[in-house]
Length: 231
Image (tube, rainbow, N blue to C red; front, side, top):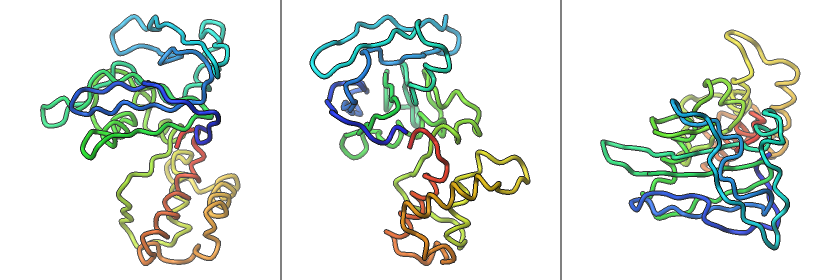
């Protein structure tokens, strides 16, 4: 689900501009060194996959060429792909030329000083703020994006004094049509998220009246209720 990795090693999988200096990627030592399997190209280009060398060695498995995989298999492997990704804020380029891919089973840590652009990169990759280049998530319609990635921002803001269970149910929004009620499957997903965060006794509590740590658990549960492959 993009949450758990094993035999992790570190390499430079993310390149950012000098202003950001965010340059750490974590991966599980599986697959090749292609930064973007399943890359479909930026708008207006040919859509051909970039030609990159593959890095083999101890701890690395055999890479399966993308040409040998179906489109569905490639998409299932790559949860997020950025290619030539840049972000401008206030007319200034704060992130430039970022190449990054995250696959199922990986845990990726984004490390850098305050103000380097870590949160900006994540928000832009999700299509929440304008960007340049290619993001596999930002290219999707909003509802489809919500089914593919769950996002818990650093700031814990709960706008309304709603019950904990009501707040967690919002995680199922990407699966509902206009005016549609939660299905049995939705209720089961909510129950699983509540159970994983040990919030059974908090269901009827008002979320805004909880402590900061309790609110964080509720918001994590909302993200888990989305059951998205990438968190």
